[in-house]
Length: 265
Ligand SMILES: NC(=O)c1ccc[n+]([C@@H]2O[C@H](COP(=O)([O-])OP(=O)(O)OC[C@H]3O[C@@H](n4cnc5c(N)ncnc54)[C@H](OP(=O)(O)O)[C@@H]3O)[C@@H](O)[C@H]2O)c1
Image (cartoon, rainbow, N blue to C red; front, side, top):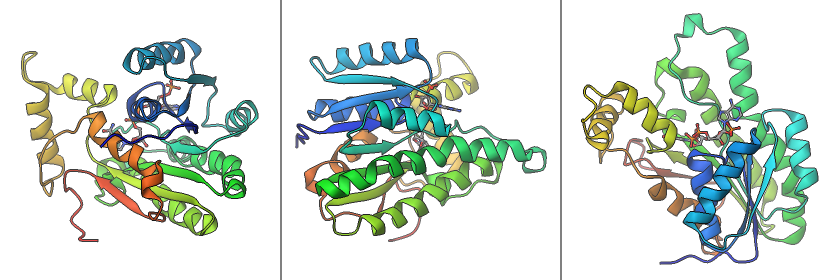
């Protein structure tokens, strides 16, 4: 099924790389104009060129700003005053940390980088979406929100926070025609995941996906498919949730996790 989302403007936070970039590419392929955001002009320009190679003729704009700050989010809303689809992807990288040696500043940084961009950008765009009677707000989260591993609590608490935020914002949007949802994502072969896995490879010629599968099973014994997913496997759902087809789905948390999360509902 090819999903079309023509004539919409999609803003994706943290989209110079990773799932943010992947979401932008997938939404551009569906016909939306996409706005890529990131802190570095050169990196963002390279991301745009990569996107245009993947989706020739795509309509792509760039906004350079540090969206982990209030000023960065304000500059985005000022430069891009109209938004139909907001994908809140930005989050500080997952890194293992010892709880007893994680200072307050690290918790604060995680909160500012991984929760507040979603708060501020949604505050900037939700009302206009409601006034127009159509919009999509999506929060990318992680299985770590509910499958809590104690080595990365400063990441996990932000992933749980955005689920809560998403549910509450869906209630604010109500029956306006704007849906607000979140996604629980498992291990995905982004550039970041690839470099973490490559650093752990026992030999340089070990197959990355085979090694990744072993790492998934070790960290998430409940995983049903026991493997690393491709970016496209995740962004297929991003596109669906941002399309007209998902109009009855709001206030939900949807999984692309290979069955890691045990809950039935
Ligand atoms: N990758 C996975 O396996 C995975 C699994 C589960 C959930 N997720 C979720 O998917 C979303 C995207 O994750 P990802 O792994 O694809 O991201 P990523 O590759 O680590 O980062 C992608 C973007 O985030 C920005 N970024 C990263 N750290 C930042 C910081 N400290 N301050 C400001 N910007 C920062 C980068 O922008 P700059 O150009 O400014 O550096 C980049 O555009 C997150 O919400 C994450 O929780 C990912």
